[in-house]
Length: 409
Ligand SMILES: Nc1nc2c(ncn2[C@@H]2O[C@H](COP(=O)(O)OP(=O)(O)O)[C@@H](O)[C@H]2O)c(=O)[nH]1
Ligand SMILES: [Mg+2]
Image (cartoon, rainbow, N blue to C red; front, top):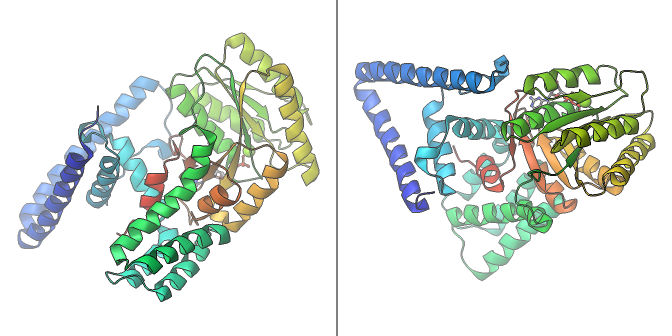
């Protein structure tokens, strides 16, 4: 299926060299280049339009402004970087879709804020010189500032310090080692869970509870998950168990419509969320649903009520369908930094969480919190969201995440 990763890297490096060469030529042959660019843009635009059409045809769905994807502009640089990342993972260059390139570009752009206050400084400090104890102190400050949390920071710094005591570590090697350490933190809970990525089991009822405080992006994420699920041909159903917010059901109905997924709800005021879930499970059984996505409230009259409510929902599920695969996924807003870690600790005490979803990585983000949540709460990160569009959610990939976080351009 895949090419030799070495070949792929060669291919990417060649593409990059060509780009550089192109930029040189650009200076000399301004006019020629202008024409060429125009032609290229026209071609790309055409490709984009074709792709759009293809999507519209295959899904027959509505598209919003947010869904219209590949944005040109920084195309060359982003394309090259994204292609390299995909190929470093052994992906066949011929099979890389513009969707994948676009997503990685978006992720890199999303993590730009985190990077600015962290990696750029770090790279400046490390440069090509060997790593020094002073550089480690700086790195420690930078990691804390990026919301990586004390424990993650200590872990990485100690590992680097140990290595430094054993040998001379060059700047580039230091970065490589740092990336590996950071990746290990993210990968640990994923490995422990025994599931590399979270996918519903075919032919079985899977129930994913989407939990988290108000405004973090639960409903939006659920809408995106429904889309992903339908695209992957799972029979999907939504339960509107946030009965506290009046507009919540309407918001979910819109998302349901976009992916052609039915929403089970109870319009009456102060309906019992557990009762909605009960009804939804009955429908799911009747329809042979494979993935039931449950939206929950982020705020009730007080905090205890919220946790009680979640455990009540969980009890109903365990009683009614004890064989179902149940996931309790905590949604965290990346821009909330250390607050996200607090939320994760709070929910994990009473909500029996099995994973986390990090949203809003496109805003002014402090992506480091993913590390803190992985290490301190031991939650595998399952998906990440970077935008309000229906396609702006992907399964989490620690390699891509760390490469985007530490991208040096
Ligand atoms: N920029 C950005 N906005 C998001 C993302 N996810 C959700 N939002 C926005 O955050 C706000 C709250 O989202 P909502 O899903 O209603 O949050 P909930 O209260 O947890 O259900 C909405 O305006 C969403 O459009 C994301 O990944 N990026
Ligand atoms: Mg909501």
